[in-house]
Length: 91
Image (cartoon, rainbow, N blue to C red):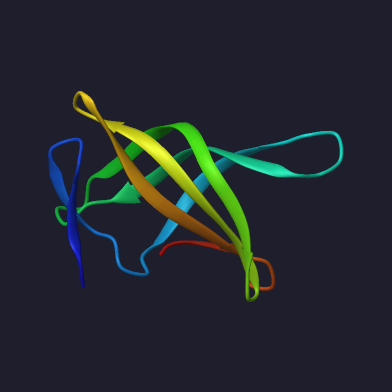
């Protein structure tokens, strides 16, 4: 398992399911806006996605490389949405 810091708190990020808020355009494409994650202490952290660097199709889903702000710098996170299970996971 890998550990990272999100807003100054340790979190597990290897394959961890997360909640993601998305917006859809008129043709049905989605874009992640924010994600919620539970840290090691049971706290729910809601984090705004500043922008999406790229989107790519993967086997069984769609991966989004997103940038979020942690303190005063931008960090990268890859969120994958699996179409059949309707599950968001940090990859």
